Image (tube, rainbow, N blue to C red; front, side):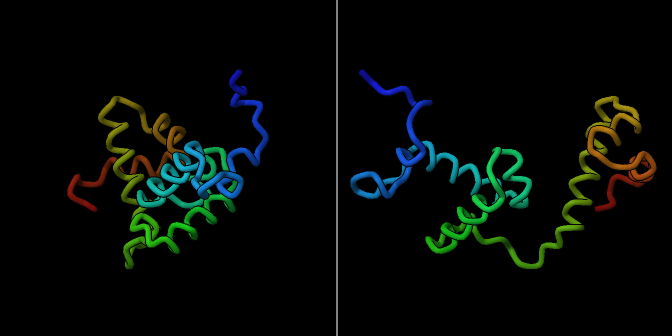
Length: 128
């Protein structure tokens, strides 16, 4: 009879308790998700919230990946997070406006002020 996966103790997923030191497939999948999101320039807090993990766990996964020289763990230098966030928000505003949302709906959806949405909608498309 096979044990129910939901009733396995936490240490059953540990690579230290398995012969050969292999990481459990569930843990390996989660690490890959974290690293893909980190490579997409998400913060540790955003990743933790999206995957229902602690931010400390995300930081540990990233530190281990850096030690393994995983290319997803390094971020390009010179990226200003504020300008990147502004660029992403500007794109979201434009896409939602094209989809027919009002400035009030857009502001509520992306968590910003209605005035900012109105200003971004008045900007020419070429501003980046």
